[in-house]
Length: 480
View 1 (cartoon, rainbow, N blue to C red):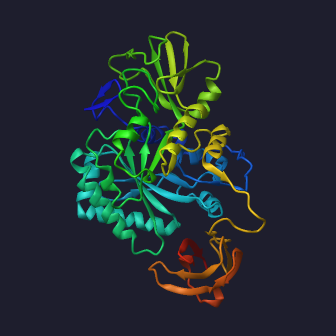
View 2: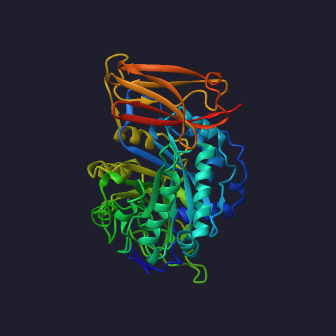
View 3: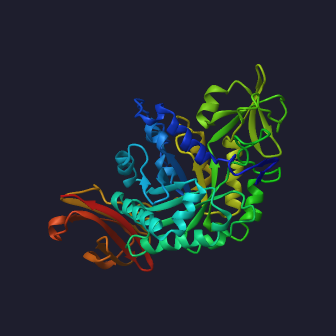
């Protein structure tokens, strides 16, 4: 049994937003076909002196990609995009998201310094158990993960296994991540491994153990209320109630280093029909054979709430620090959601707690609006005032063009003078070329690589820049 705020539910009643929306959009054919909508860019004007000082990770679901909302993303205000999702079955096979590979997205992030991540999902406890303890199934899944990372030049993987058996939450999860780390470690490029975790541990999780092999945790900081709830309430309460985000960080994640945590926030709201106008109203199904029909499906996206319900009475719940709407027709209606005011309070908590950063479920849910992008820019960027032409940090840029043939340009910048080494490696980590091996002054550099000079065959390569004790690695693809 699970206790979420005032609601007692069984495991079979509960489905996270990730799980529910995955199922919902698969069952609605309009989202299974390429959409004719051509999204127009609403990206903010980039402040070239403003740089993100925290990780900002957003999940991009296939149904949003299919609608074209990825064309409206402000890539300058993202560090990671998690492609949602590659579905794992019990035997270790992976089902790619609709219309994969997303070539236009892959090409777009090349020059934006945004990391593309695989999201691996499974929501069945029996399947997950087999994937973690059955050697054959686990090996097949891990090989499939590695193959996709290498094939598409991606930066890492997020494991989103939900409804995991209590008996598997300590040793089986840890062992699975250990095996994943082993299979990715031999590769020269260092892949990030992230594990998605619930906001409340219920005393079963040992979160620090996961970090023995995962780089950080993505806290799904929502689903405190949802389609299973017996009362209305906020999906992501900052405070109040039996459970809330502040309590989760202070208690459930108290033993986890703060710089290993990403706080996920919702770009969606929950809509209930109730018999009362009061906050936290009890919801009673109108058809006892069709529970919970008091919850209007699916969860409403931020853009829809502001466009379709903006005329409704808006209130702010002082207990949870979240907004909500109400109106009456044949019954009372309530929508609880997050806006720029409540999200700023959550971002302030992430900053005060010195978390690694924040995450978004989901990219595209604010399509066509700019206020949430402006909030990220306000809270998580630092504006540098620098002398002309003097870089403020060490940085290796993505080569351009990429993929390439017969030449490409590699650029980098040095904040201080140092001895510089630039080398190319193949997939097995073998050095195949040294491009630079000399002392360089602080500044910006460009090098044009001609494939004919090194006799490189087609394939995926890694190039690594080292300056003193600093090092960065990027991927490039040679096509002949």
